[in-house]
Image 1 (tube, one colour):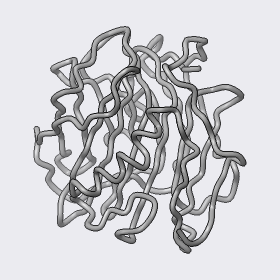
Image 2 (image 1 turned 45 degrees about the horizontal axis):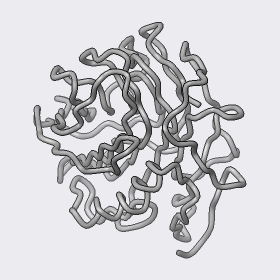
Image 3 (image 1 turned 180 degrees about the horizontal axis):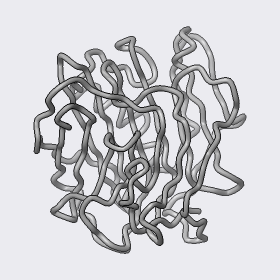
Length: 267
């Protein structure tokens, strides 16, 4: 099942992610299915706070990516090639560090073609330190009025912060993403999520900050969030603002781990 956004410009689904995304010394992976019914520049697919995230670019079949800085960093994609009324699986990996910089990797897939990494180019160089945000939004840019127009489903978030080369994403140097690291994230998370498989083993370290939590939004709903950090409840509070549940589902049904949260030590 999916949710429809865009009847109101303020539509979104939001929850606390458990750690600050987009801050210096962090890496975040977002995966999910989106089906645009209109392609309008600046409409937000997802965000952490009001800035960090992905939106429809001025070249409306492509995407613009932003980080939150004094002068916000901006990147554009080439190869996403979105068209209305089609489902696309998209995955976004961003790594931030005040000294090193910021880096993005993006994968695109369709119901019939597996994820392929697309080109990401700098549009505006960031100036100043990175500002993070711990509130995740689907279908908008934070509290903005630029709601995505269409459906979104099976959206997952995986986060890593502070320690390097550690589960779950194993980024060795924040602010950069090597091809080997990108390929490892693709194989462990991106391709399985495209298949609808959220049951693959997830590596954990002994640090409690490595715990991933899976959030199910209502029975049968298709919006899920994975967060890494200590959290005191099985489910975070999820708020639906204007987005409406629809029977029009994504190409694949998500298969989930049970129970809804998984934590452990060792690898």
